[in-house]
Length: 318
Image (cartoon, rainbow, N blue to C red):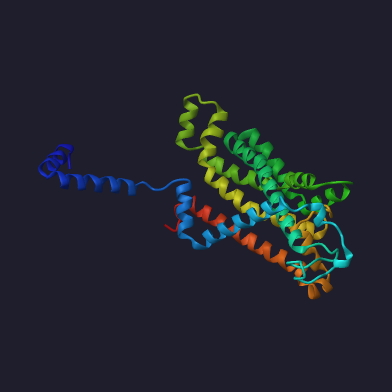
């Protein structure tokens, strides 16, 4: 229908009918606009009840561990009292005590805080290294791509776990900050490879070619045009990698090559299960940390999968 015919039709109707038609057209135009960004993520969570529950559980774990940590002294928690060793839950101890008479519940709170913080720190550091290098490699190609990818290949063929164990073993004194740096040196390569492939595809799009034609500086194209378009993939990758980094820290600490002995960690608590006697007779020393890790990993993965679906129209639930 032409604009003139539409105007004549509206003019022949009474004012109330014309108003209803206008409201209906506005409603249809609003419905036809698909939600984007955080609206799309919120919509995806609203349609996935498991992801919503996982998000609530994850937020509660993070808030409780960090908020409670402000009122719990690490020195007090790590103080040994052999007279209270291996006390079962109750008698003033919510989750009992370990072989050093330390309160397992307070140890669990500080351990969860440290493990989450270290996993988050490793995720941020490796992303700050890997994502820009990957995008630069894919955008420029040529010599830059060759050099960066050969460095990535060299790091990836190394026995990373063995290298980390060796470095941690030869450092005379190290702390959580040193541990994060050591892990970050080796764990950035996955992000670089992923975002190189994404940048190769993105750099061939019309808006990038138009920006180059207009003389837009390269750094503006990369950081203000390409990276915003890759933001959904960046958020998804950060979420899923976060769970993996927590698992790496817990595993290395369990093996005795993670955080220093005086630093609480979920891996330290689970380390008690290496003894058959503890595994069978003192389950309160390792079971709470094991259950918390399972809940934490599942929650992060369900949240990450919901964010991943929101970035891909073919996988969305609605």
